[in-house]
Image (cartoon, rainbow, N blue to C red; front, side, top):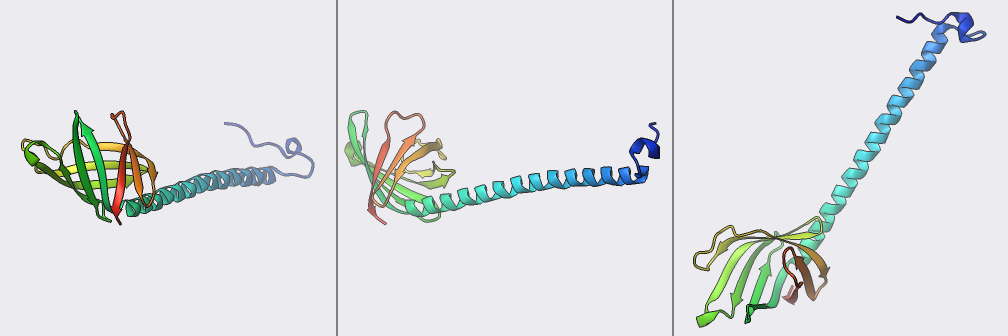
Length: 165
């Protein structure tokens, strides 16, 4: 166990008690600095997450409305009308199949962290598995008239036109 410093070793006119208090003050100062550094980090992280949440809410609001897209699927021209509600629930109707069949789906289209997640929970197509695969995409562009999405695994962007807000 180390011995306490003698007053002569500490310095002229300073006692071991004075040095001990100074070391304690320095340790306390370091503790406060570390605490503040972590507190600032958590505050900034909270603001960032709040900002992302607000941005997602704004995007979700901008997605609300009726959208239209034409799709070429294996040489067949299909037309889709997608209705998105403010809460992210959506309904889609796809026409242009053989014999005039129409596929109707329901699910959700959710904006999160600048991306879109499309989940189908109900599908009128025979033998469809629900919930179907979850599509994830990145919003390339979104304004009052057009939404462009780059879906994972697809080689072309999907361009949807707003029919009505």
